[in-house]
Image (cartoon, rainbow, N blue to C red; front, side):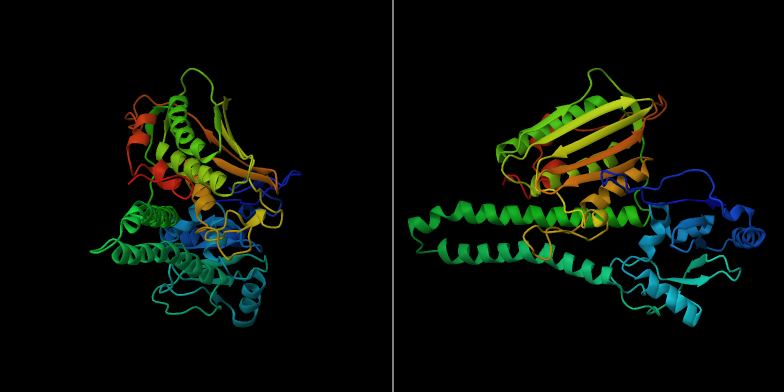
Length: 409
């Protein structure tokens, strides 16, 4: 049986942790509850996919089958992810009224497998959650989160497609037979707009795929042996070469020497590229990015600080939510809202923690920490040198930064 404790931590500086904090057993530890032990023992022995949440819908126990059938539970605050978009008070009220609450059916885009939630009969305030097979529609209302998902999806694809079709129309009119020299001179601008929009579509597609794989457990950890300091130097060196022409200087303070480690660098890259993308996109005059890497007592810490627009305090608690984005100009969407979600889930998958602090008008700092261990039996990693990132037209670095840099044709 697995016992889990998960809660957000918010310090005096409004630092928001996006991963579970693990500690000692609470005073009302379910492990001292004979009814709870009997129930979870039966569920585990029968191979039933099930989990138990506390009154605030935080996960306290999950069966082995439950982990397989509801892979979101392996993520930080995974129980809340299963209920994403539902008002907790509405869920509790329907359970009190009807005896159970069923989430939306599987026909909805990016929805988790539908689940049914009911209260345990011991009066403890805890809830049993199990996946449902063949449910067409839940008893609960469609979540706000699903509407936001579809709106974000449409926004991120419709805008670049509009540019592409508009430019193709102009090309067909102005660059065909009988076109003037002035019309032909505009062709590079049309092609550049199409190319930039195509990169944006590619990035959105990659991010949606990454998020889906992480959420549904299709992104296993692939540990390889690597010199982490060298890997980070090359990545940030290439990033600086691409970002600095936009007017945003990037500096990286990385210790000299080597740091051999068995690590999944693809997940580290996924986190860093999404963080860098945000630092470049939400910019202002005078913006600069400072990276600081440190290793102490078996833990690697990476801090990415910018002097961009910053994030309002009331928005900060939501920045790790999937498909949530905030636009400083008041538009409904500023992106697909998956960047920090992917960063959080990627770092959590390899045992790390991530936190954010921000001041409006001054900038944002994202810090993540990772446990570092070396294992000489692990195969060596194959990763890009700085020159490889720059020479590859479709390198993950170029795709991630495609909103901010000129994408090569």
